[in-house]
Length: 149
DNA sequence: GTTCTCACA
DNA sequence: TGTGAGTA
Image (tube, rainbow, N blue to C red):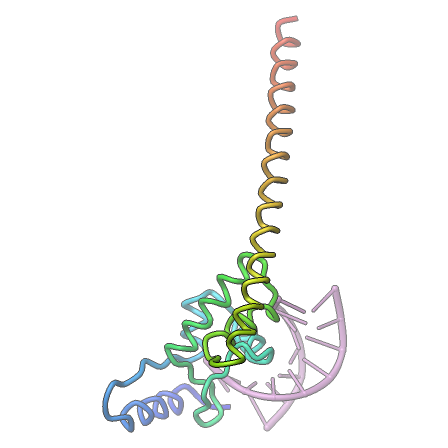
């Protein structure tokens, strides 16, 4: 629990305590506005291990990196990835050595599967579109015929 | 305004 | 995969 003035003061302290390249910081409301999310959703992602913002007097403070991760989360969500899958994708960024090879293998398989699923959906959509166009034209022809009767 | 937790779909 | 309510 922290009012916005206290948070602003805390943010300022953080920024001024780091001498050189001050990292841009964000509050949860800023991210919500920017990505059109609710605070509940962002906290939900954190709860699932997709985000790990720092805390300043209890309030969440997000870095550019958190912001970049959020972008990835939303893009992956948009193509139907589960949060659990997205977590794996994100873990790829920080992994090295032996673990990284497994991560890459997993990502290779998972993205391959996702590609196949999306292509199948596209085929289904194309087929449905063809059917609907046929129906549309048939009905149009009937309407024209009945009007001239 | 922001936090957390519990309930709910 | 989230939302809503109640709370401090």
